[in-house]
Image (cartoon, rainbow, N blue to C red):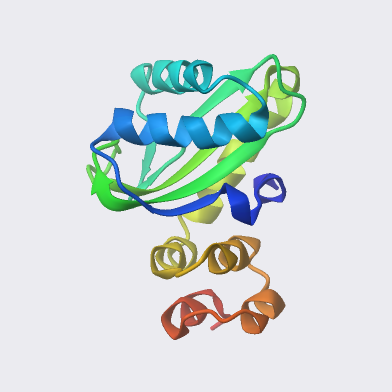
Length: 167
């Protein structure tokens, strides 16, 4: 699962941006540090991928991604934007939830299945609505882990907890 490559320090809530390039630029700086690569290289690769086809998947979610020959394991980040922006999503909805992935070029065989799994998971209403209501990176991690035990042990807001608990 992609979220095993995500930690609380990879979560950014309510990032202020001026548009898609601004968002990707700010995200690139954060994720590049974690991957040990130059942030301008990350931005160029994310922007090149975005220019080849929008990474908005619908329901206010985008998954910008790029393959890197210089990394040995996947690196992921989650960003909730302060205000939704246009990401060219098929449903036309602006994006406020951004999952960014840097994937090792040496592991391309596992990339598409992992990307598909991520897209299926985050499109689930209880996940994306919970992420919109989360008040901390702890809450985000609990929602993404979808671990009910963890979510009841954390000080999650009532609305976010209700969204991730079983019905």
